Image (cartoon, rainbow, N blue to C red; front, top):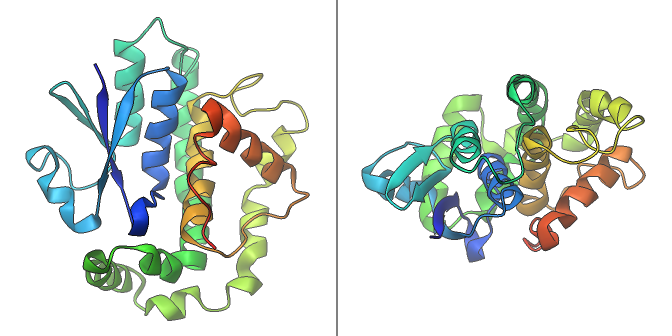
Length: 229
């Protein structure tokens, strides 16, 4: 039966959450049928009787799983005959490292370059919550946090250097084909692609080529979500 994926949605059903994109790609990788249930920030508390304070959440015919990594591990366990997300226990350990790398080196840089754009991409009912919570987190207005991003783009390009070096030897973080490790970094870059018109990658960057291949996976699952204009 079809799995329900509760995905964070902004205006016009534009889904941008990096963690939800990990889950989308994982479900597609496994070849599973799923339906997206678009959910605003202020509606998360009503999902699955308050099962989680964050998204993604999946409802697999009454079995509720939250958190992107836990969802991937659940899918790996419950669908062992489908293509593996990890390629073994070593792949799970590698995914935890890539998760930490993205959290420490990519996400903080990216969010500071598009946080006001993310606010503007939200449904009106979610904007006050987002502004208040993020300004409290940053200790500055969204406008102040995002200002001067043109001078800070090199920090993102530098943070992506390990991926750029790896791509000289193999097409995917997972090796010859993508694994969940790829979806972690893919989600981090799909986030600003959907939420912000500010270009994060240089067109001739090998990382941009890798990201384009990721967008094309699973009949263009990623690229079917329009980029911000």
